Structures are given as structure tokens and as C-alpha cells.
Length: 389
Image (cartoon, rainbow, N blue to C red; front, side, top):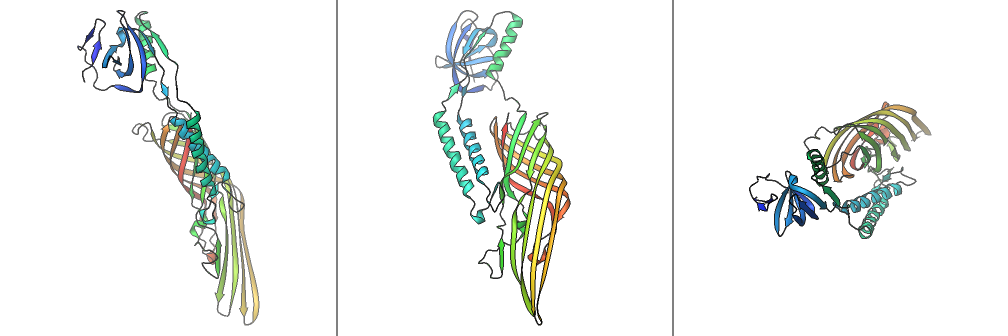
């Protein structure tokens, strides 16, 4: 594209310019005076190399930096949309997390099978309401105007040009601190137990939905040492909803009934390190990260099996009770990954997957109730919200 250039002695087209122009999102008013005393008023459109491009008298006119004596320019217009969106998301998620959990389910869990989806509904409603109020009450704003004076000598001019260039293209500052909250579907032990309700079988009943969603699975705070590496701390909740099973047993010459109850509570406290292997390839608005964590996890596990079997010839009842438990700190290891999309500089949303293990203990199998053995750990697949500053 041919651009009209102001050379200081009228307009000309004799200067070669870069093909691409860095355009400004919102045109800003500019008052400019050239070194030969020409005054110009126009709208800032962008830059081509070291040439300021203005909309002046219905034409795109270029003014080389070295030919300018004075520039007054409006500050950047600040869109309120990032604040509206972040307010809606954060308030909705916070309210849903606080409302999640009942006397039957641990804090942070929602269980659609048992009708405890109200926190999600409340959170969505709160987010929409807060976002609307912020959009109505918060006016758009712009930064103060800036004034630049040139012509004080070669060195001073160069410093002023650098300041002017930084003002035009401030760039994205690296965010050093990151606070993220992760939630999603937890691989609880109840998810491997067949779901049975009071009407599914006359002889069997399960108080366990097999679907466990934890809105506050992991909270992590980290610091970026470089754009690729970061270190920090994390809190991972290993607690699972309790399991309660009842079953009728039949056998030759008799029968019986039994119950099984299980609870697992624990929290892992970890030192974490993260790496973004594709940081130099992905756009600034995207981030893929791998997290590794090590620490300790106080864990408490208690399971109780009660079975009563009755034989008819002779008539007698045998009671069997088995209790398994362990308590205390364990070495904790975590492996996780996230893929984030930055809605704007300070807020990101994304997908996450993570597995945390308490080393040294395992959950025993209970064949009478079809409960398989498992390591003392669980995974989470879901979403994460991040604040960056």
C-alpha cells in the first residue's frame, strides 16, 4: 500500500515503508507539530516502522519520528469487557463452591444423583447477575493523554523516541504470580461400584451415585522464574464422598444380609514445579503446562464390613465384622497438566487433568460388595480458573 509521507516540506511518496502496519484498536486524537512548524490534527491509526500513521484530511498520512517536534496523544481506551467477564466467572464459581457440600457429601462436592445441583444453578445465576451489574455500573475509561517533546539534541531525541515507541506499543508484561483453582470429576472409589437405588433391587441398595464432582479439588499458587518455568505450592483435596452399601446374601440352606461403609479423608500439601514446553510456539493467549508435585498428605481411611449369615438346619446365625483403617501422614506425589486460554492478561480458563497419590497405603478390595482394590489416590479431570498478576 502507498502511504503519503510528510517529509517536513509538504507531502511526498518517496519513502519505502514496511508492508504491514501495527494498527491501534481504538483511533485516538493526535495533535502533532513537525520540525518546520507545521501543525496537524488527526486520528492515530498505527505505525509502519518508525513512522506514525494518522488519518488526516481523509487520507492515511505518515510522519517519520525524526521529523516530529511535538506530539500530544490521547491515552489508550480501556475496554470494560474483561472486567465484566472476569467478575461474572469468578463470582459465580466462588458462590457455587461455597454452596457445594451437604451433610452427606464433603465440602466442594456436588452430586447430581442425589439432587445437589443447586450450587451450580446458584453459581450460574450469581455470575450472570454480577456480570450484568458490572456492565451497567462500570463506565468505559481511557488513560490520560501524553505529551512528547522532540528536538533537544540527538541523545535526548533518541530517548524520547524510545519512550514514544514504548507508549505506542506497551506490549504484554510477563505475569509473575499465578493463583489457580481446579475442579472437575473425581475418580472416587464409588465410581467403580455398580449404582443401585432402593428400587433397582429388592435385595441390594447403594448410597453412592458413582458421580462425584468437586468444585475445589486443587488450589495452587506459583511464581514464574522464567516465561517457561514456575515454582509454587499446591493444596489437593483427596477426600471422597462416603460409601454405604447394603446387600442380601443367599446360600444353600440359609441366607443373610450385610452392610459396608467406607470413608476417605485427606489433603495433600505439595511443592510444585511447572514447565511450558511450547511457550515459544503457542500464541500469547494460549498456554500448555505440565506440573509435578511432591509433599505430604495426612490421610484417614476407615472401612467397616458387617455380615450376618443364618443357616436353617440347624438354625443359627453367624456374625462377621471386619474393620480396616489407617491414619497419618504419607508421602504425596502429583502429576498434572493444564491447557489455558487467556480471556485477557489477568484471567484464564482452561482444561486440566491431574492425579495425586498418597504413597505407602492402598484401599483393600471388598469382594462381598464388588468393591475393587485401589491405590490411595485419585484423579481429577475438569476445568481451572487462573488469576495472573
